[in-house]
Length: 110
Image (cartoon, rainbow, N blue to C red; front, side, top):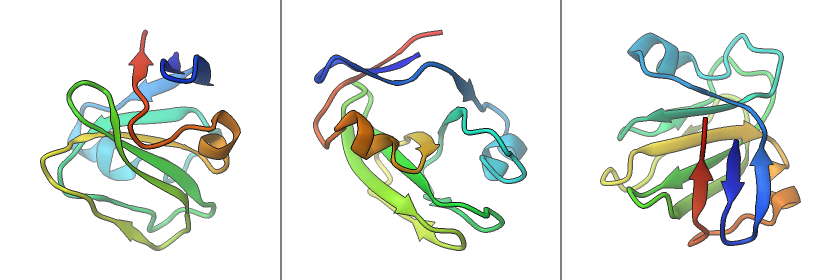
């Protein structure tokens, strides 16, 4: 479960944690379900090959949100400060529905 501790709201009941490079580079590509995807990278994310927009959260080591990109459309790139490396990709509209904002703290539990 991914929970916004600051707002006391569940962002996603389920998620997949990607550890391998190939899995990370694919993310949502080829997926039809909208299970949240969590992975680490310092080089940004892309939506090449996606057919739908996504929401993206970037967290620091304390799991505080430091950057948000809502409605990242297909065939785009999203870059951020490389000192942050925890990424959560979500279904479009999840950030707005959960009222998640920069500086909110998240809890990620298996």
